Image (cartoon, rainbow, N blue to C red; front, top):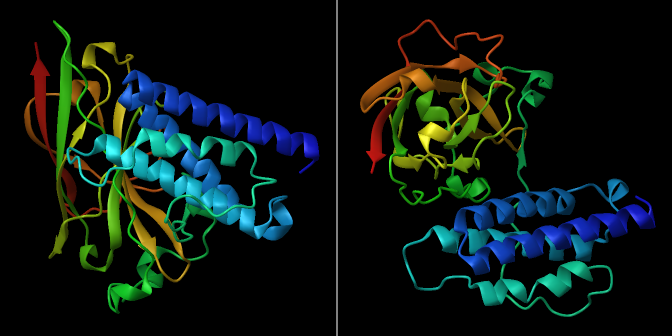
Length: 307
């Protein structure tokens, strides 16, 4: 990375940081959370880069990782209904000069936080390059002490949008997902996104917390997802995607196991089940292949809110 490229990168990070805190100051919480999480992912990626692929020193990368942790803490505070022990906006703003001057910063970090443990999260399509299928590789992965695994992936659920006259909001409760090896999935969670026909995000992406329990052939979540756009404002052909992800200790990354989706004509109040498809996630819905012939599905319950 050249000096000019590194300077440009720092400028982009600084602009993103300021954009998030501005949204935060203005009370635009959904936008602030989204900006914080995007920047946190960029910083974490740089912090985990190999020495020969980074111009930052190991100490600088540790500081970047700590800033990423603080961004996640502020994001979590904005989503919490608890007022205790929140990471405040005033605290976060203290980190802006540190990020902008990361190359010369040599003081003690102002907050007692630890970098998130390294954990690679594969993008859609990257799983195709793996040499082994999960079923053969992870036959007994569910056994062993939980202390041998990194910290769990935090949820990034967002609050319901304000209501608007004549407009409809959608809450989807993810109840459970049926999988033949449900008990072997480590730290399972679901990523929820709303995409247009070209696979472009129409709303911020949300991650559920880690599943509440595993029982027989089901992984239970029982968590509400608030879709971050009024139904009437979604583009024609949009779909809501659910990517089931879990941690693979032998390869030390979080991978997508399967996915499901529902289209706009399936939005109706009440319970529903949708089919599971093989990875990689096909956001354009062109080459779908069912995960299994067995009757295993994603179980949902929809609630519509209209003024």
